[in-house]
Image 1 (cartoon, rainbow over the protein chains, first blue to last red):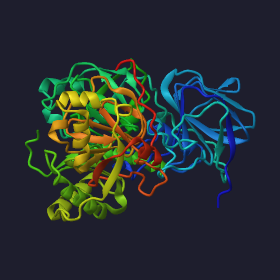
Image 2: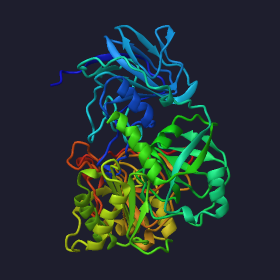
Image 3: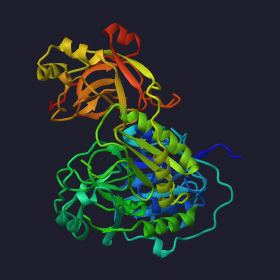
Image 4: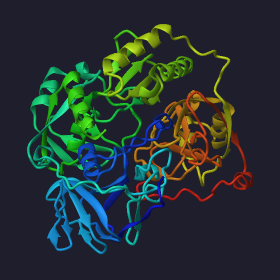
Length: 312
Length: 241
């Protein structure tokens, strides 16, 4: 039995983007409703795990920083993902571990120093009314979030939290699970059906060149700039787009499509980033360099299962 | 475009297969895609996560921890081997969308008339004359791509999309027509506005229109449009227009 949610945090400064995310909105994509959910599945899953929550519990995705939260009561939390120069009261807030807060404690998110998106989970989980089966906040669709209308948290909002049963044991994520988001990164890509329509030179470039993360990057997709890729297919009849699809419009510059992508589209695709690779890309700042690596399904599936096995 | 034999099963990531049935847009595709969607629902059961039908394809998203991709592929092969189209008598539900065609809410009526070489009234008559089929949903929640338009009305998208297209806007582009369920940016030619609520999170099914449904736009005057709850606020002029 659950008791009613109680105030968990008060927002004293909103920052540019702080979105409530559960695992995503499923079963409604045929209506044109997108997936939503955490852009970085890995960090989101760890935040919930360290806060003692089950898979799918709503947590806060904080992009860029700027947010200031004051605890309304005692809370057990975990912070993972990007280092946004976050302070707990006056000290640097430890990431990737279980933390206990007292009423009045202040979390101040600064600016990105490593990665782009931080995750804040609270024991019991943030509480909001699901819309179409999920609280995943998708601004473009005006769905989900604390208000159900797809809005980022706002100044003076009080963020309700479900009561948690037993307090989770203090724990820390192993160091191997705490990525250095600034490090050179190679993203695993499962080749897709149109890959043979790209020229040989373009395929060589796709998997050997360095790609630069462009300014045009958000929860819908991340544009990569580099050598111009050429494909004999310039446009297709629109069809479903799955997470991590790397589409190549006629300008030859790939776009990796993330959680808030449109549900259908008509550009040829190199293939799909694995779910973990898509999440890793979502942590890259504009200007950062990435490489693509063709991956096999067997290895990718094993990796994904191992990842999920920890949390589900 | 594609020279591989159809139907084809194409990998779409770790957790999805693209079932490609056709390579051109035809109304009859819907009979096969509807049957395929229904059969996949049964074949995948609890392992099914989402299905995204479109003009010529169905993307099936499954939980790869419950059903490995190779098993999902086998199930799809089995479904395809037994697939028969739904009865053409079982046509989609018919929706009548009351639409106020006016330059204040359809500021591209003049442009469409000019490109087509006909009068504004002839554009309205042609658009509201025939029934359309819903070929796909996408772009935004409840946004239905409908067709096919009378050839006379075929005209390109705007060079510069509008930053803000009001909800209810009825629009055309290429061989297709649509009505915008919510405010979004958009590059289609706006020719009117419907009072119908196209996406309602409180309604069972959420989206008024579903793939395969039939749609008839019905021309109404401003008073009727407003009586039915339509918002007659004119489309704002944007600097770039």
